Image 1: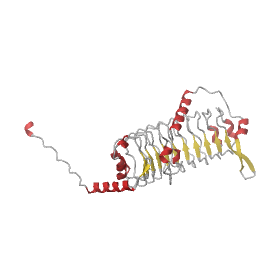
Image 2: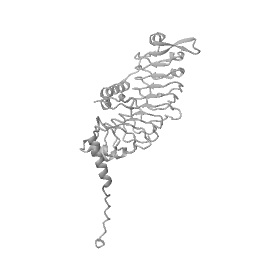
Image 3: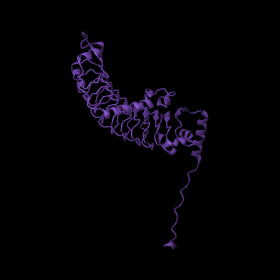
Image 4: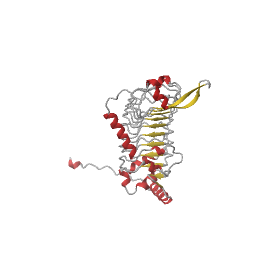
Length: 340
């Protein structure tokens, strides 16, 4: 069952949710990882002029408008090990070099007009590039990248690093990444959400990592979508009232066992859809009602919207709890001095 199924009935104002992974994509990630780990040294295969002629398209005006140049290049799945030739194609704006054997993208530093880059499925160990002033979309999925250093493009809006070997998020400077609204880190080896301090971020994908809790996300006041599926999260501590825009939270396939943890989501004022299926707490008979008691503004839990009857019952339960007197603590037992 896919997370696309989880989202099929919940679309308003939650753009990009259909990007959630399914089992087929998960298998693809594992295949990519295995390829990267098992691959031997590849025969040298540099990018050639003939390949460029085949891959170039989209003729556009350049400079003062009197000259023209091709601005789009697709050379995917060519067994390339070297793209040095790109240094001289400075007018390129759209480049796809995915599914090759590249370990070095430094020739792209010369493409200062670059808007869109796809470098998935290579042998890259870093996404580091010089600051590219116009780069808006960059994808480095299914490589062997181990860190998030050296990414500082001021117009970058979407960054895809899924299916790599990243253990910790470092170097993502909010003063430089002022336009970044979508960050994809699914299928890495993250054991902490620290280091993601990007206040403009709207969508954050962290499924299939090694997370046990949420921490350090207090500054994400514009975040609307948070995917944490298939981690090892057992507590819902770490969700802050500062996360005031969060509408969709996916915690499917974690290890939350205590229904009392749901009370820690009460401070999320715009939370409308929560996915908690495949957690131990969902086996309890009062699971749906307790979720609605704790979060009156919730519209959907897992695949189902709440019915009016459920809302009325939750309101009654909430009111009854308010009216119940708090139990007084029992006095401490007095020590029988005769025992001494």
